[in-house]
Length: 145
Image 1 (cartoon, helix red, strand yellow):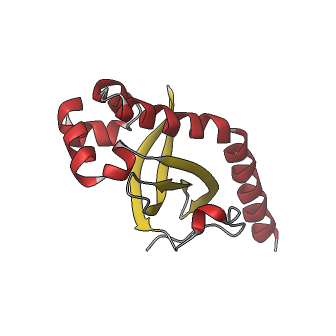
Image 2 (tube, one colour):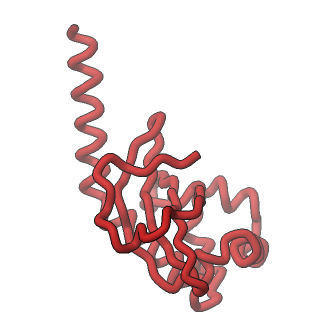
Image 3 (tube, rainbow, N blue to C red):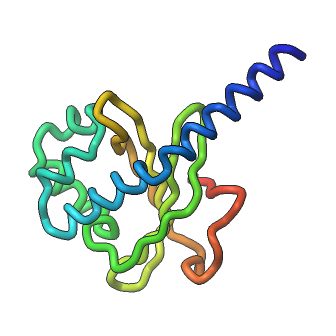
């Protein structure tokens, strides 16, 4: 029973710390998207985690991947932050994005905290259910497949 209470206290503590950084996390994602909109891939690259930077090595290669693989992030028409989740110890910020053609996507941004603040470590994407932008943010969180 004592171990269960300890585990519960740890979860509550982690959730509180995450909530305290919600504005910082959302600021990182917004700033990266603003950099993409300006085709400033050097700045956008600074918001990626060291792991992602190591994979792509240059802002140009990173920018090419985003333009070709994540056009809804490169040129979103609209964006709205939803909830945050901790899944298997990893923090995910859920975001609803509408692209230039009006298609809605649910994105999960995996966030990691380092010495110089929060960084984006991964992004999961799926098409959103029709009319999701008009509905209130879900309370229980989004599940990405």
